Length: 201
Image (cartoon, rainbow, N blue to C red; front, side):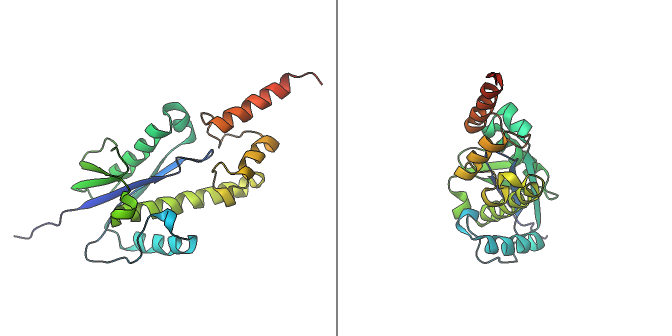
């Protein structure tokens, strides 16, 4: 009788902190017969290394899925619940059902398999590292595409995070649909715009 391997999915999300864009999650089941060297937390890798590993992970993983929760969902249910929703979608989108999902962080989304939260999992579990890498690359590519439409906000450089450049762009150009209106700097920009429009010329 052939014994089936015990399949573990690593799960991570990126994009909790930005003022703009979706939060993106990935779930990855690595092939135990194929070793991918250099897997680390995506934040510890440079862009070129992430891009190279992204290709290798997608080519050799037994299964992977990238999912997201939209800006509208973030503003409706808050960023924590939206992150959980994106991770749930990633796990449920795998074409192979894992025996266990290892989730980066200290809480688990509601998924149909067993799950365990692993603090600093993106530095400790290779499958979670792989998930963090492909989620990061996917989100970065999405923000680069949005930069082509809205170059005045500088999404190509800060990827939506609250840098000084992005905060100034909110002052200069206002809030657009890509911005998370539940986040404080965006709320403040909307309040400034309302105040300016109410002041007589």
